[in-house]
Image 1 (tube, one colour):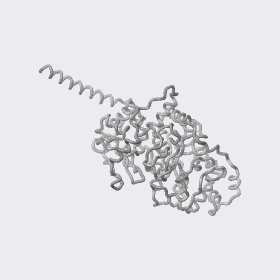
Image 2 (cartoon, rainbow, N blue to C red):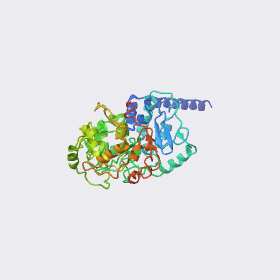
Image 3 (cartoon, rainbow, N blue to C red):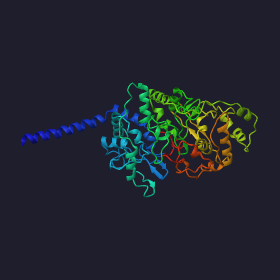
Image 4 (cartoon, one colour):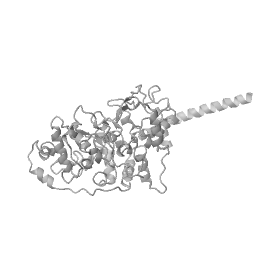
Length: 465
């Protein structure tokens, strides 16, 4: 009996020593630093920080077709955050969408993508959020969804049907290491498909990897900004972009052919500008190696628009006149803009996407090109809702969508523009299709402009942390 007691006591002490060793290992500065970097890759802070809020303390409003939810506190506070989570519980939340209490997280948390995160990266993330992030006492906000739609148990059925079982990413045999790294970042922690892939009838992403052509083919408007295609189409996607273009865009938010705006401004300012150059190159390389999709042909510049504008007087009666009066000073009569400040309109994929929500939104409300560590100047475009009528906005938007050889689909009506006016409901949370010109029918998102999860946009409202 004495011998057994001594053995039991020894085993207990061994477990205690082992647990202490594990805890000490999680406090390793190198591991915490790795976790901090991975949190940037996954853009955790932008979603888990309220507008003007404390980092990772939650509270950012996320619109859905059935109401609003709010991001949660993921600081290590024991009462209101995740301080009491074990490593296994943390892994279950991140990769399976299962909370500590066993309930299912709303799939605004991209656990369908995070299911691919490797064990080592999960461990590093856990170390960072437990020992590298200040604890903040901030109770989580209740969802603003009416009962019975607010019940969580149906989400568990959704999770079983549409969330893959966690399977840490493994490169394909013989896959180039750069391509494999890019694939991991894009399909896993970077969760690019959460915005850039269309969703199905029950809000599931229609594809989680490049085995399906719908993957990264463009999503619904998010906070009134369209997430465009990242595939090879030369008019609406990245077909005309080089790998260097993509890497520089993610690092600085601006290249000669484009400038970041809206929700993607948050991604650049809060996430991708902090990534290592080799990871940015890997992402760019992977995107350019995706299987080719149906192409709409190369953009061909047409000089007729410039000639017309050169001989048009400023007025408020036609699209061309409004452009000369309000737009040409920055974007120029040739539609080429000013490199890395005012983006070109000629050949711009944003103007040629099926859904014109982004260009309407930026004309009505303006936009901000956020500063980054590599391009520290912020550039803003003013909003015109107090200068132009909805009909005038529609005229100038239609003019640029079809000018200089741009080949946009459909026309914009004044009734569509009114949805973006001050006080109108966020069109990205409007639920079923309401566009008068059939945008939703032309869009790759077939269930309406709001058929996605739409977090509030920090860019232009507060500064990146």
